[in-house]
Image 1 (cartoon, rainbow, N blue to C red):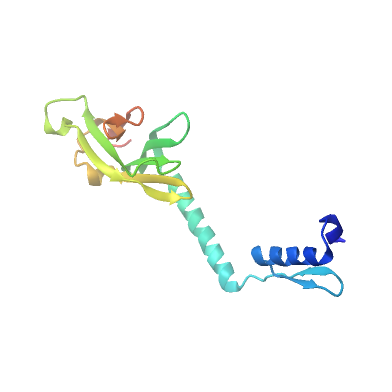
Image 2: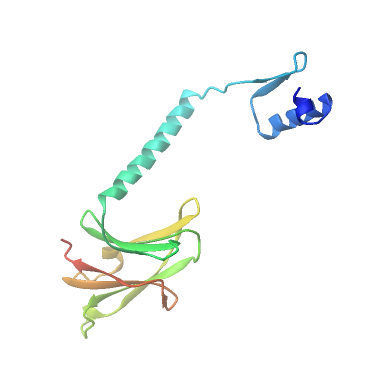
Length: 179
């Protein structure tokens, strides 16, 4: 019957079904006597169930942790391919960039206390940072401000994400101490 619908001889149809079962790695058998395909069910072991539940729990925990942080300022390109922002996580400033693909391996992050002045604390401080795979095709990087930039003088700070000498978008600002 299936052979007729596939416009094949019964032998060709059986070979086609066998190849389909093999290539798709299905748990199935062909009953040649009755001309049926018998599909098996694959029970998931308790061990595998535990692994899957642990993975799901880890993902939910990560989502919860990300929701704890408060966005101070952010920007996304018009295409949404590049987004960056400043976040307050448990009273600490984090500078994050996320890209839809690996457009570049490193980027430059520059921070300056405003208004620009003559003192050392007002100097433009830049660092180069790598991007890492975040999951799927998403890439990104998170920088702990206090670890990378020693200036903690109260005031307004301007942050610029750059690729080489060119900014990836507009600069963002934050204030210390955090409110």
